[in-house]
Length: 387
Image 1: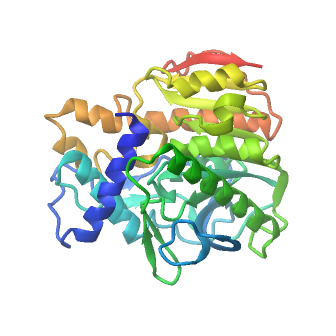
Image 2 (image 1 turned 45 degrees about the vertical axis):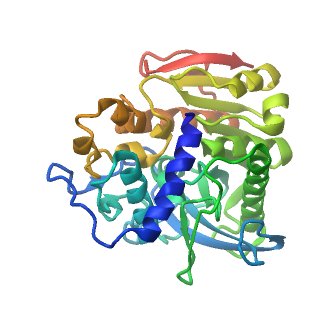
């Protein structure tokens, strides 16, 4: 089963588990770590984080069970003045959904743990400076905005505003400011027509988010360089980034973190610089289609020892969740979920290559790292290059 389909099935299962499971769950194994500090951002800037609530009255929500305008929750990471406390990683709905996902994958034994994961960004800190490029991040199918924290914090520390979108009714769980929690309702295995609709809605979500920060009276008004906008995403979010660039000229560059290419991007390429960062698995057919049709700057690096989830924070949770101990006698299942390369290392590699790409294509700083294999990062293989 393809990783994207496996992820969708398990996250849909996790939503039902959250809705039906009793409050008490099995205890975390005693060998589990007590707390986890995410890898520190590597830039010189302090990082703030805040959540934005968007309503687009021009867009009826196609997946709402009752007529409603499209509503989104967006997490923003940004250069900040570090005068507020560190933020928490995620809310209870996200924590319960991630726990249920792991239990569905492992077979039980994981208790909620995200309250013991510590990010570095400061909660609602004042924005520092101005003129920052903007990056729109799209989640994988069923995933949630918190799981992009490590990459987003690092990018913000190097001078970007990163906006990570929860695609309502697609994300595993979305909590709104009034306390509502909306869980995903998309089919486990979509038809081609359903998948195409999902991609259109996702692209529209990115466009709505960019419209909002471009015009609304948020803390980011006057702080953004709207001539330097990029898109990135994991799994189906990578396909979303490619389609956003293909259909909206405001998006100038993009990164696909182990996702396929669908619709126009597969057959016509992407009309802007584009980087594919995949696992070391054989290429999907849509990778080949994209490469054959892409006519601008493009690269494909494959990361040996990575799992599909290595582009997210999930692979850093092997110890804090107790999953490593629970899977000690099932190494193949452990590798499918967490990969062979430690999550701290895959996080470093994804940060370095994503940052180099946007530094070159939004800031105009050449990145020779992207032109050849690097002895510093031997896990990365350059599979394809187009200039």
